[in-house]
Length: 340
Ligand code: ASP
Image 1 (cartoon, rainbow, N blue to C red):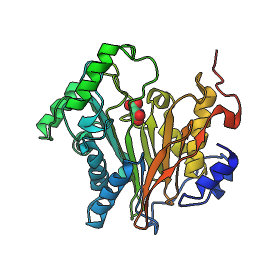
Image 2 (image 1 turned 90 degrees about the vertical axis):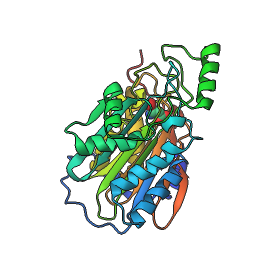
Image 3 (image 1 turned 30 degrees about the vertical axis):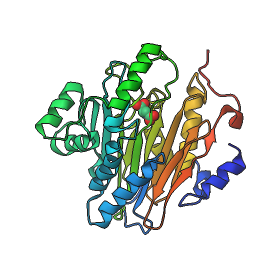
Image 4 (image 1 turned 135 degrees about the horizontal axis):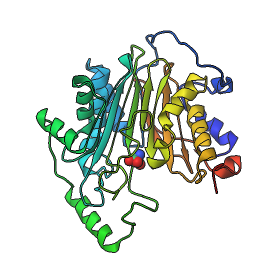
């Protein structure tokens, strides 16, 4: 990604990149959220985030709450049987069972809820919200999450779709991937959705079946607060998609938000997070990770390693799929400070 191409892409965002030159000084204390004329602004990962954003916007238009918009929007992706990486159409683990991860955050009150390695339920985002709203906990996993969902009467689904089962059998037979989860997974994606609501508050959610053919019990970045999603009502929100192991070792979304707190434009915060991770990681930029970000002013951006990735932005004025800038070592020279 050349500097010129980055700047061209940046002009697609709601704000300018002028703030990127701010120094990385001490954390600012910001005033309470205010009504924002640009809002609502929905930002989601991947092109499948666009119909999800639009469903969320319809909820707000009909007078629904921002958390209803997040739950309904992500719920659209979870219900889509053609989506092979979110919800019960998602990819199973090495045992042939879909284990879903999801989390949700509410900026006001800094609330969070999460479920991980959840089997047999269609809408993990709704269950994560219920954890947030009805328990004193943040995260429920595995069988405990399943029991909680059962007690609350959530919609059940099959352990794995017929299509995914056939693909899993093929994988197992061909042994294309090592059972220990090594190698580069190709079959994965996540919907992360972040929202600046009309009242100036920020919200977010995240849902995925995770790394295809992962070891049973593997949990990625997506349901981990600060890794796959982070919302700070005073600053902004960020979400991630890609190989979770390369995000969760760095608290990736938290880092994006902290860089926005220090004055960076959301897009530059995503790029700088990638640079920071790549500078530390033995793999350099060969990480397959991507971030979206949105600040309390309604400015947004995204960035990914390699060629970058597509993300979706929806406001009352427009709904579009945008291409993020990408970063490789060719863009900024050798990285990977911990390389042996
Ligand atoms: N981050 C997800 C995980 O590692 C997968 C993805 O977004 O591609 O579980």
